[in-house]
Length: 598
Image (cartoon, rainbow, N blue to C red):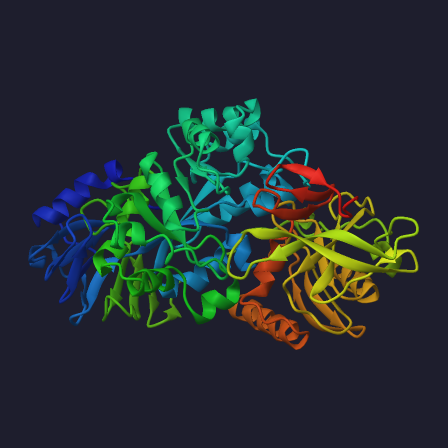
């Protein structure tokens, strides 16, 4: 069963009624489990009957639903909980195709996810979204797609490979798997009444679908209220309790995330656990999880465990990644609960706190057992144009990464991007840097950073400085994953190695590489849009692990430092970023000079 073949509830209601009444046998009956009812926060020794991928009956005894061909599953005392739902995520951040992402997360109990493919939209435009959407429709789980809203994320501050227009949004709203508008990152544009942003949100609202939010500013004054008035229904950029409270007070859902590098649940869930706010308006998500996290630590089961460890009642936390999410997207009658008519998405676990995952059922079929995938996740067709996206225009040299100093200067005051461990925001720092041979040099913990244009082959390079990685020796790391415009971002201590890393990625068609002392230490090939591998998650994770080891050998001790690297060009999150147009002061949403003048 797939979303493409799953019958709509009205189309199979007669059969569901017949099964529940005992006039027709169920395809599957589950006995011997302790069923978690998220509508009431109860655990009952009930039974479940399934037909046509949906739940027909849940109650004390499903014996009347059993026929000669019915598969009867004994849960053997396990808790049976609704399949877990990720409220906000990006498949591309796992470096995986939708098929491989589903294959990685189904054994962890994630049976539905709401994904915003704005990464591939920045590279391939609407066609990239279509490719993701079409592959998702053929999977044995529910992967819903939100139409990306902001490519570019901040017009005038970056250049993307393709732009998303209101006409694109209106067209996509008619596609069967599109459930809403992806995160509205251009929050200054919304607050200022930008016609393009308003047109995209209007097209979504008129289609009766959900507008995703992204308000990445600590300012909770008039700008925040203006943003909320524009229509975004949720936000995942909160980092503290006050952020979560502010969102829900405006009628938005607070999406609390635990990704590979974002740890924002513990600091916000106190709004529920300590302040006692209504938990119905709080949901859990990952936002960004790379392949290593998925294969080793889990997906939404990891987030759920973490929320419980932070003091949340297990059944309340379960609501936050099941029924609350479904309700938010207007799909409470479709998923998120063990109740009649809903998609038969179920997870067996022996412990509601530690959440070991036993059997996973999605759309009425067993898709994983004890951590092993048992279903097929078929790939779509990724055409040649999706694999030819890295265009530098020329080979780069060390000279491309020099920063000229003002004439006669022996030292300069430079603006430096400061990395913050485990958080998306950066700090706008100032450092005194030496000058030699007319060029600014690095010192201390300050490294070089460059944004290399890769969509149109202009040969453009924007240089800057970054602090916080701790790199030592002659090294450089380059990546064609550079949220959100996805040019090529290079961080290093040595211009020669930066040139080698840049040219290497052009050679392989995209990915991530690290050079040290002139030799390649690690390479993760990402041939699809320069963002995605076509290999299984375990293979990608192994290469990502080798990359992490190479980063540590070069002196970097940050947790999930690659994720920090990939966000250094994200010009909608404060405070300081780099783009193909220059250094961006995100507190003012304007370009700023790299070298401060007296």
